[in-house]
Length: 80
Image 1 (cartoon, one colour):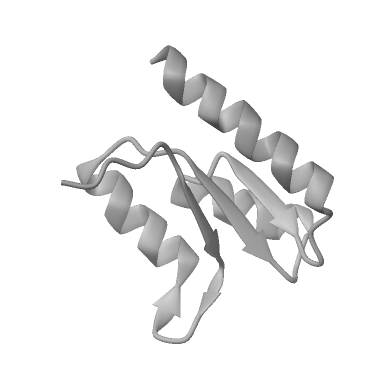
Image 2 (cartoon, rainbow, N blue to C red):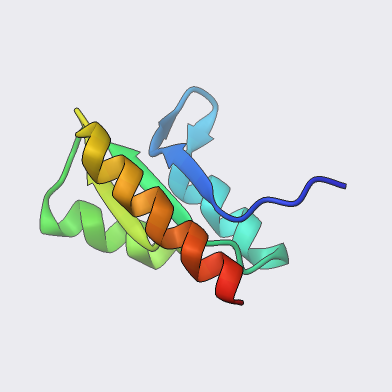
């Protein structure tokens, strides 16, 4: 059995969307997620949050921002 602390997913996937993926995952598990997208309007962020992502990062993603976001989510997962 694989045990993940969180998921990082692009919003645009070849066979669906990251939003659909996150909704399906959240049906079975309360897994936090980071959405990656080329779009970063308030509406894009809202849609990601509604799908269950805790964070929405706009590409190109700054590595330091991604690293800090991953570290924060990993710390939250350890506390649970």
